[in-house]
Image (cartoon, rainbow, N blue to C red; front, side, top):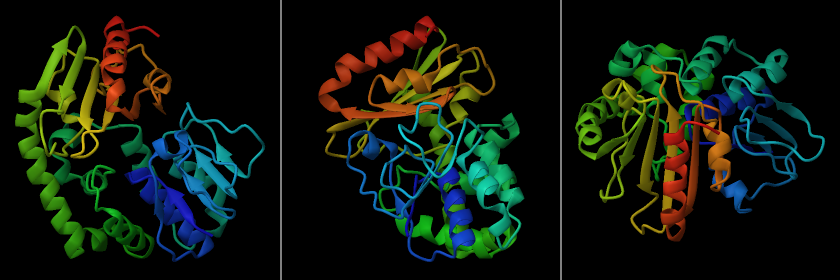
Length: 295
């Protein structure tokens, strides 16, 4: 029995809950949604899939993305919610050995971008916000850390988790990256009407950073498009689209929008990965729909 989830904070919390409820100690299998959409996900009988699209081989499925559906009856839970972790908590609560209510509360806030400007500008003042920023699918060598974080959150208090040497170092790195990321956004973001477009394809090593900072820096915009190559081979383009959390006037359901371009997600945040040969067709259409602000 394996836990299969996505490498983001919601996925980490899902893994914490499932591993605690079912006493699973095997490493988590970390996958991106695109692996499911391309038929590349190795899902086996008995697997528990969370925060990812449905797969017919799984034993249990938990998800909250509007663009994901199951084409047959399944065991688990699916509905639109602030986080997939909240559905896992609902399902497994009687079997959990610890009270994870606070952890799931922050998974809800992180995954639904329920932040104040203070949390965005000074995440180091908010432990859960800062910790969430240490988990990113853009970290190609992140699996050992993600698995370590699952084990820590399962057994330790938040105070002890934040004091862990590796976690503390990752948090320091995040604070440093966020300070530099403002300069990157300033240099590589252009504005088209109410849309901010952060195009990092010109950088060999696009930096990670606070994905909500762009909404503070360009408050007149209602949605951001972030474009980068997936790796140094530059054969796959990654597009992340997010509604501004401070200027909520984007009318486009970006999950449904990117579902037309090999991606998907929520109404307010979504992503897509596609072959570089498609970008000259896909990118103008994605940006054009956002500029028109209609769906």
